[in-house]
Every structure is written in structure tokens, then in C-alpha cells.
Amino acid sequence: MSLKPPAERRNFFVSVIYGLGALMSAAMAIPAIAYLFSPVKSRSKGQDWIDVADIGKLPVGEPSEVIFQRKRVDGWKVVDEKVSAWLVRENEEQVFALAPGCTHLGCAYSWIKDKREFLCPCHVSTFSMDGKVTAGPAPRSLDRYASRIVNGKVQLGPVVKSEG
Image 1 (tube, rainbow, N blue to C red):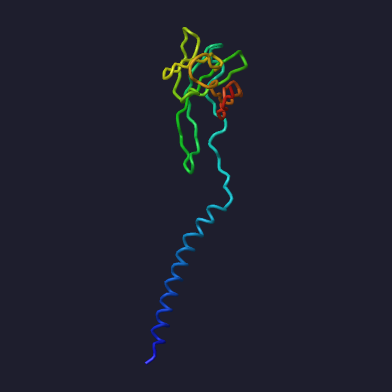
Image 2 (cartoon, rainbow, N blue to C red):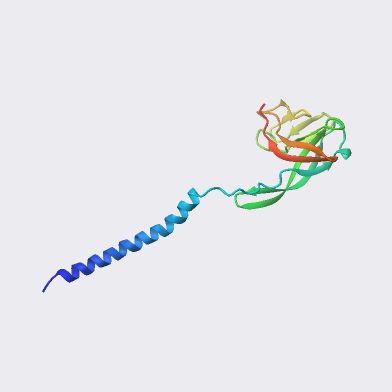
């Protein structure tokens, strides 16, 4: 009797097991490699400019809070969300828009008409009408939206982070 046939059979099964392992590894690795090295698909980042108010309805020298809808891309999802901004009309043709979050911890602030300042109630940061820090722990001025006026409508773009 020869012991050769059982050894060949064992080698065959070991080869089949290794082959199946390699096939499963390749089946899992190919999509991962394709994901990592494929070029990024250009995708719309939501709306660039949004009409938020009529310039004629804003009071000069007094902040007005506006609430508007915008689309935002969050990973693979497009989210439709309500957002606010504080619009300040400087004169007949100029307006700027402040983002709604305090630069300390992102809390919502409000306009105190009597004191003519913005107040963040969480940690008592205060800001002047143009968004500059006047008191409190806030490290920098309020962020602003890019803004423009087109055909009498105030349009807002992305938020521009303040530097100081």
C-alpha cells in the first residue's frame, strides 16, 4: 500500500481552501481599493446664493433677523434646513449678514435694542452692531455670510469665518 494518494488528496483540499481564501480576500479588497483610489465625483454643494429679504423692507441701522431655507450637502445626503441670519442695512445700497452662532461655543445670540448690542446669554459675550467683540469670553468677532444685493433682493452665500 502506498501513502501517496492520501497526501495528494490532503494537498488538494489545502490548495482549495487557500484558493477560496484568496478569492474572498480579493472580493473584499477590490471594492475598497476602488473606493480609495477613484477620483472624487464633483457634486453640487447645495445652493450657492439664496434670496433672503427685500432690501427695501430692512430698516437702516437696525439689525433684523431673517429665517430662510437652504440645501446643505452632508456626506451623501442633501439636507434641507432652516437657517437664520442677522441682516444689518448700513445704507440704501449696502447690507451685511452675521451668522447666528456666537464664536465662543456657537450659542444663539440676540439683539438688545436698548443697549444697541448683541448678547449671547450662555456666557455673557457681547458684540457691537458690526459683530465685533465688546465683552466676554468670545475669542473673535461674529462670522459673516457672504452677501450681495441683486435686483433689490439680499442674497446670502457661504459663511466667512472672522479673523479677529
